[in-house]
Image (cartoon, rainbow, N blue to C red):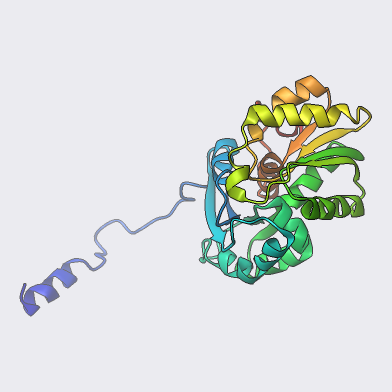
Length: 265
């Protein structure tokens, strides 16, 4: 193409006042846009978010750098990358809610620090975290005394007990699998999670609810069954986080199949 041809092509592509002028609608996601900051090693959260979110809501994912090892030290190190990760989710400022999608990671850093870092990257969005969603879910059930199951090592479990109890939720007992690596946690089958949770709950029949901690756990599949067997509320990490983010964006759809939390609140 000659230089003259190039100029002609450019001229033909300019806006023509005789043609219809551009107009806009709300896009594919008129009900809101939610961002989730995942660990680099995470393999469960994204599937659960897509599965539990109703139509009309934009889902946007980013990841923070982290090692496969899930320890207090490695979870603390995530703070160095959290603001950057949040900043690359819809940098046009149209994001409504952003959540740090890691239970242990959000309680190790603490919600205030998590919110501060998320806001640095996404200043127009409401901030939340996975542990925030869990606490709000347990409070929705007015649960004062809970049994907690986790895949974590003891040091992380101890921090979780202290964090929940500082917020008025007594931990009747916490039972961890002692797993350090995210790549192990994602391979624990749901039927084993049911077996483990039932055994833990049986030790504390007076507890108000059961909480299965960790976004890596494939636990959304077992919520309904556990609630039927136990006769009490069950909260699991991803269920609580997604419910919380939906409510923050103003969506209060009631959904069957994922426990009383989604059906009743």
